[in-house]
Image (cartoon, rainbow, N blue to C red):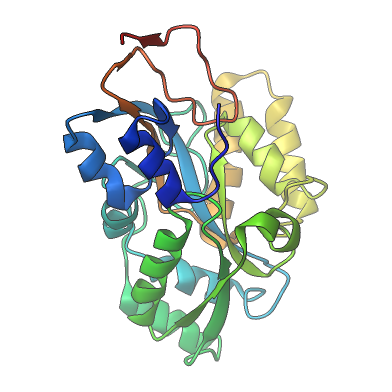
Length: 282
């Protein structure tokens, strides 16, 4: 097993046969890897997701109208195609797939530039400029930031990309900057809600701290009636989608690129690779 920091070097190692498997290949190389004579793509329906986090207690993101404008500025369908090559499903600004138990099944929010501009005007932020911290520490980070910058510009939002070093990104940027790119693997509904949004959560990366929201989640966990429990879980998700500090356009399929001699590799989407089924034929 090799740790290769640069994405281009990982691709080169796979193409040359230095390695047999590469997890999470970058979108610009998918067509080349799919069509290559010695490489192929393997996909799993479970997903990872890139998210853009706003601190809801820090200006200008402490105004819910600004957060909503940032959401309406995003074209999720184009984002999925341009950033993830179409491999995935749309998500409505909460990091929970619609296929999971207790998840919302609402149609993802459509881009609405007029609505975004209206909200910014109401908030007195018609000429909003923000700095988005990002890095190439993971696949698709630079791509999602770049595409969002272009989409937000349609609503009059100037997004400046603040590209940071990969080796210090999780220590210096994550949880600390008011506006940055992050990522998660898919988790069950309750686990993700507790991980990211409870007031005392260690990974509360949007600074979403609302005791009344915590109370509803706690109530859901203790409700025996299934329909009532589901309604409570969906209530807290609905509030996050409307008022929360996450921009979540999609959940991607878990992808890996392998040499053609590799059989039965299952992309993990996590740091825990499963080598039980892999077969190297030659």
